[in-house]
Length: 444
Image 1 (cartoon, helix red, strand yellow):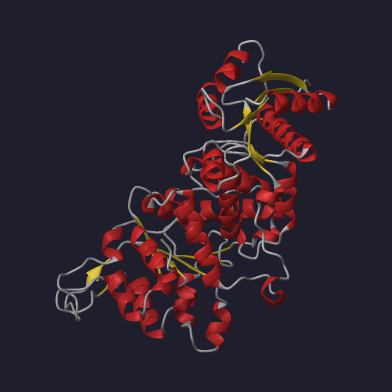
Image 2 (cartoon, one colour):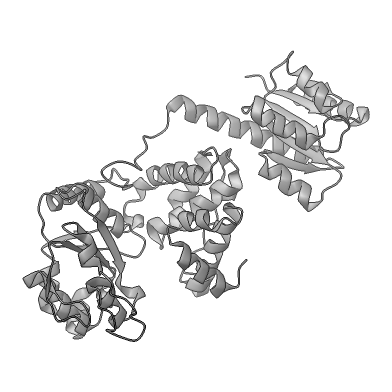
């Protein structure tokens, strides 16, 4: 297929030499001496790529780029300038430039950049021809993706669990999507219109966890200036999702056992017993059998929770689902960033398939979100993917949690241009929690 390039530069020497070099490489080349002349030239030809100087009279390269993004979004723009200052680079990439070159030009670099841009164009064209995978964000499976036998078995269990009000125990490593499974059960149940209330048991000490779930009356403890309804009262006939149930105290476990046995609970400081019709779904990454052996988890509660058990396999055991997950995450990240979703190149998919994903789906999602930011609505290439080396952190493949946490909060703030509400949405956390993390890590 023809490879049409329009060169825009107010220096006739640069126009001529660059055109000569590209014609020798079998590109179809037109030239223009300004941004205004470039727009006029586009009436005669339809370029695939425009290579434009930044500093020009009449209409500079950045203005030309913005005009093209509105009038001809399918045309890729490569900007070049001798003024390689940071604000210009940032503005060019923010406004959708495919690449940025600095003068004096290295013809080897120019050829490499154009090859990459045309490769990206071919990848986008093939993706459009093949059609995109269907979105699943609003489906009854609530974002669960997978066609491997392991995931099909989980879909069947979700259907069985949704048809009853039995207690469910969901097990799996951190980041495998245990809450997504819980939400899918709730969404497919008869009480789907009732509330779904999620509580992270590991995030609260035992005393506060009891108040969070059961509520409290005014004056029950220091700081209880008003009565508060707990999660069980808020859920009505809906679902209570208890994440990380294995991290709770024995004292709390005994109170939860009473709720499961008698459907009754007592708000903190209250004399009256309350009844609940909420359904309990619990999740953990812990080895509950080992905790029972160590007398750290009640065996009777274990059997009460494990009426229906769903075990989610780690991502490394269902590697064939990685492309489907990545495609869905690219679309979701693009929508969250308010930008066109880029296309995953074959090289990027290959790199994603090679990794073991010790952080499971959550790690993949963070990796994809960063790549979407860097790809700027074009094509995600292997170099956009930041994947930890298996030898990192003393050969464990695991970075310190504080390091990962700071990196992800910082990335979300950059991706949202400092908009905290949008950054919190990207991270899947509340705005107050984001504020605490910003303060904790000294970010701004």
